Image (tube, rainbow over all chains, first blue to last red; front, top):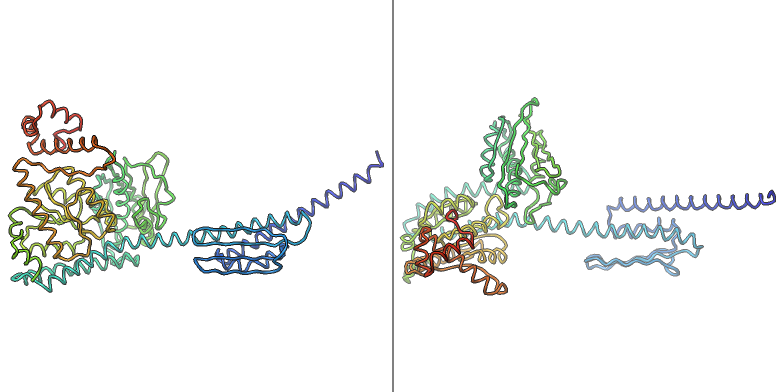
Length: 351
Length: 221
């Protein structure tokens, strides 16, 4: 038995050396993968830049060469580094307006090196694929935002164009004997046009027109706004707030407008909105708004996400804007969503 | 000389004769545009009423049965950037069988809105910005059609309007026509079953049968 000891020691040592080597190689591979990930982050996930600058890291990983051919929204670019012959790993990506072929050339090495290289190549290809989808996602999202903004602008600009056309026609060709009435009409219309144009501009620049703080009876304003949206409501509590009129109205419009849209969606139940004003916290009023007949919110995480709308044609900016405005005046806006319970908005405003 | 004046000279229906036949309800949420249109139509001699959203529009229609023409913007609050509210007004007018002609004047996506509006029962579709001349022509046409339908109704002719797919087959079309006709005649006779049966030339039991079949009740009126 003792004569076997030297062999056992050799076998054990070999296993230990092999395990140590594999561990070292694995750790090296992780470090090189992390290096590629960091490079990608530094380049803001930009695919052409990443392809141009990734070679030093790949070379360090033991690859013999890299070549790529990219069709980027109709423009063809390509690049190559190192040796571009011999054994290779190739991937082709073809998504919408981007086509890419990448080839990674391997060193003439033993199978274990190739195994580690191919694992690293998989990580590299994964990063390339991710960059491709990040770009396409950003393009899609930008187009969607533009389309939503266009829909919003279209309504107001077409009204403005219609008004100008009518005005020009009436001035060009007034009804005989009605000239005085036309001038009187213009006196009535022009201030309304000015208000409309200011409203458009403020919405586009995401500004409120007024900075002058006025004392408001909050419960009365809530009742009036709920009435405008035809929301049957019960209001408990009372409070006054010292805030700019447009800001406050915009916050309430966006919250109650959301309840109105949800109520219009439901054909079975009429809304039953409960609004509670709590002034127990010094210097603040907490307004809790919920619809007892409302349905649970299926996407609570999306409520305050800009440019996301459950209603395809909405701008998806209302609640986001309301939250920003609430924080801007020193308050807050939150939503509580529980399974099987209607959504609750909690608006906190300084008094 | 404006086209509106030419129309007068040509002896076609004018604002003056239209005034005797009914009023115009202007449903537009943009205050400036509403005021301008209101004043422009009024200066042409029309009797004009106004509303800024769905509910006031329907209330005005119920309070003023002399309204013959509705000029309607599809983008109304609280969803002024979609056509939902405007189409909702058309749908309710058609459901209530209010004897008015609806002219859609909107800035929403033209093709889709026009198709939706006509499908729901609008008489005409004008895309903003349009000329006042075109608005006047459309209003005059609407008054003309309205007056003809009123005359036809006095002669016992009922005009029905509904949209259907030919692929649904004759049975579906017949049932829809039956329902519309029974509803309309019941409405015209103030829910008098005897009078309705007489006008339709059917038995009273048949009227009760149709009322049950289509879920028609006096509350619908």
